Length: 302
Image 1 (cartoon, rainbow, N blue to C red):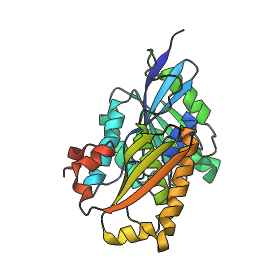
Image 2 (tube, one colour):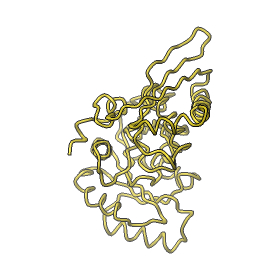
Image 3 (spheres, helix red, strand yellow):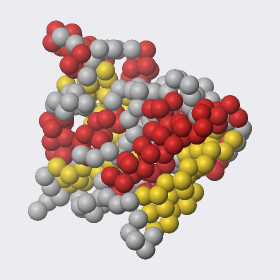
Image 4 (cartoon, one colour):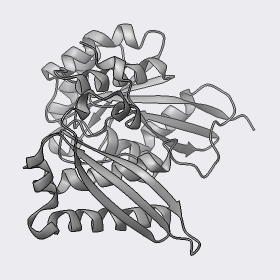
């Protein structure tokens, strides 16, 4: 049997649906999904199987105009993901059409995706009528020579199978890079930290700015088969710590419970999760924090 294997980079603006699409393709949650933009920080890889092909998805951070060091490192990671891939898929939102952000990506794309096939995936198609969809398809294909165009709903699954089948057929021949049952190449410690960060973002998206990160400090396998996981939530200001803790610690308890339940489901066993909140005013300027997120600190240089 001839096997195929390769990397597919999903690029697009923040909130275009890249993480949702990765999770849908892989069939499990490997990338965090929230209503807040810019939640994906590192290049999370999901591994999907389609027939004799293994598709390794590089889910990149959203491409936007960077202002801070963290933003610059995230954008560098996104373009780096595209440059390392065999195939690039540009994801845009049907109801938003050709935004300024999409235009900016199209300007960079010929250089970054040189020599690679680029497919267009128009997401959230359930939000627009057919004529608008056809006009958008025509407009985008006049702006860039896409190998193929797909109309999908990552959330509902429409058109996703067609995209997956096409990708599988376009990948280079070669041996699989990961074991059959592996769905992501992130260390479990990082996946666990991402799950907690997602719960924080979902719970506090009105109040809390982006200046927080979560690290798994300790992971202990217990004799009874359960795991003890200790995590630190770093915030930039004292006031943020109070927001996360909540009145009489109610907020952090709720976040901890939600993260623990999801971790238990993901790992298929009992988890004892312990969260601590620490104030580190300058964590956004610490190289170590970036390594923990899978980003390159130097990419953030202005």
